[in-house]
Length: 109
Image 1 (cartoon, one colour):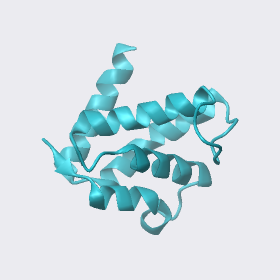
Image 2 (tube, rainbow, N blue to C red; image 1 turned 135 degrees about the vertical axis):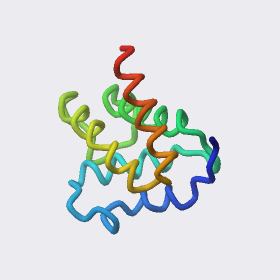
Image 3 (cartoon, rainbow, N blue to C red; image 1 turned 60 degrees about the vertical axis):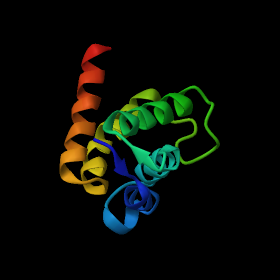
Image 4 (cartoon, rainbow, N blue to C red; image 1 turned 180 degrees about the vertical axis):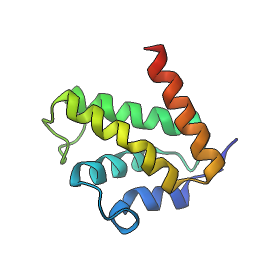
């Protein structure tokens, strides 16, 4: 399944408008993931965008942001909470596939 990501990217870029209780760190993470998404994507592309953001921030390769210098355990918690953001930003069936892909990826590591 491939979808146009324009609407989801806008929601990720403006997370606080949709999920006001999210921390500044979660808002920054969501914006960074959204910025990495192509115009059209399949579920694995969304999952990989989040994984690449997490890796780049942890390795010090990402531009300075709210996430810079956070311990790996905190980044992991932000990533775990991102599944809820995925469910908000993407259509239900697509979001389920993204979350399922992320779960399978975590289990295989």
